[in-house]
Every structure is written in structure tokens, then in C-alpha cells.
Length: 163
Image (cartoon, rainbow, N blue to C red; front, side, top):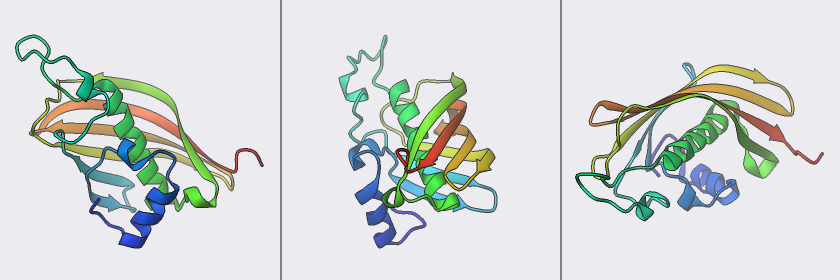
């Protein structure tokens, strides 16, 4: 996955990530801006999608599309990247993250299989402690410059849950 990290850092991320690499649906990290806490990424909609591949598609009634489940999984991947790039949270150091609330989710248009999607995320609020980071995000996903998904969500990252 191209992006603002070295091959060693990318390997470390996936060697210790909380999901298999197959569940990470982002194909390229276009930009990670620590100053504005924003990420831009890209997803190829023709890649293997675990739920979309199960859609019974009929072009005029129910076209092949990126499912809502995958949209939510994309937000999890983006949240993990925020934790990694902006807060230095490392899975191999005992950090784990969990989505905690979907404040609002709007599926604005069907994201069809074919054109890639542009994914934008921004941290809007963060509380940081020695063993906990709570962040709120705004997500916007576009296909061919059309907004297809928009949400506000929160996640919590904790260090050594059992400690």
C-alpha cells in the first residue's frame, strides 16, 4: 500500500494489525497531514471485497456495489491510520482500537463497482491520556467526485486492556 511510510513501517503495521491485511480495504494512502489531522486515501472498487462479492447483482434493480458493511470497515481502517500516523499508537506495543459510536451515517449514493473511491477523513476532537485515546472523525467518500458516504464516528484506543 503506497503512502507516507517506509516499507519497514508498513510491514510493522500489518504484522501487528488487529485484522488480517485482507480486511484493510485501502489501496493507497494519498496524504497524511499531521498538522490538520486529515487523511486522504484511495480504494479500488474492483478489488476483492468480502461482502460485495456476495451481492446478487441485477443491473436495473440491484447493481453491484460497495456495501454499507465495507463502508464501515473503511472507516475502521482510516481510524487505525489516524492512530498510527498522528498519535504514534503501535499495535505491537499493546494498543488496540475499537469503534465506539456512529453519531451519524449518510449513504448519499450507491458506490458502484468500477471507478475507484476517494476517501477523506478528519479528526475533529481528540482526548489523549497515557492509556487511552478517544477520537471523533468526519468521513467523506467520493466516487467520480460524487459524495457517496458521509459520517461522524468515534473510536477509542486503549493500551493493554487487561493491565
